Length: 105
Image (cartoon, rainbow, N blue to C red; front, side, top):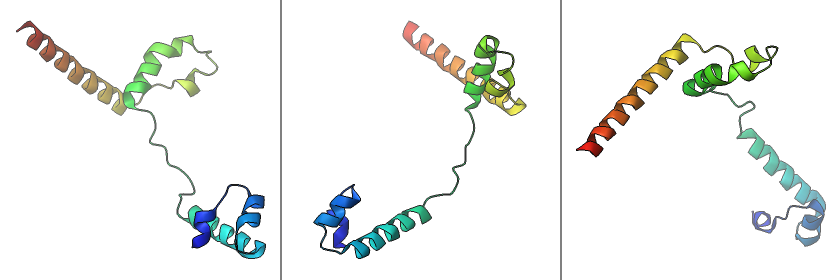
């Protein structure tokens, strides 16, 4: 795969500077493209919004969005997202309290 080291972005430049003929070069490039495409997923799977961000959008920004787009842009969080938000908020509050105590002492 010596040609791999000589790769240049433009096909015209590749044809001029490669010791391989145009047909061999195009076949190799097509093989490389097909190989790369076979190793990538067809569709990326989204994990969704962070629960903290979903609740924050709903609480703080929904009121400023046109009512026509509110349900699309800032939908109401699910029960699981609310629970995750409250548990995360409670954990952060406890951390802040501990830091304040350490500063005082």
